[in-house]
Image (cartoon, rainbow, N blue to C red; front, side):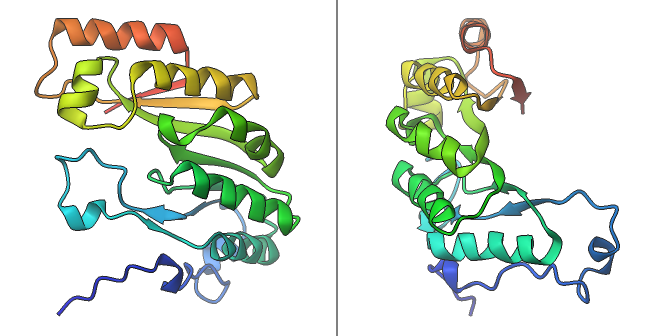
Length: 205
């Protein structure tokens, strides 16, 4: 019977050692590594079974240990944290741990507008964060509430993007179009939102 492991820190880190991944050791690979710091909760409420939505956080010490190991193995200094469901407190805990360990790295992370608090942006910047990829999905408040089931509003999304840009972050915003409930009005709302927040990159799924 399959076992559902709730403690992400219990999983072994990906094996990038030279004897396992010789192509990486030989050079010619982009030394940009993805590190998972949480799992679950990033999907809309209707889009995944309850088990997949359970938010599991990896201990910040385990996250930073993986960063340190890759730095020690290959001198890697650029990372992407892929836990799109990480809440604000966990994002900042990872940033504090990076600083505590003296890890001088640059990183970006997948996130949601409600997880980026203005008061935490100086810490994020100081810890090496230079890019944020926001999942916004739509510019329609009705669709955010009724179709996607997100816990943030359009105004909060605008504030998160503008605040992050003021700290020099590269901003990517991800949208979905069309969803089953989109119409010309919601399309126009999305276009207007993109025009207002002016992210550096727009991804449309």
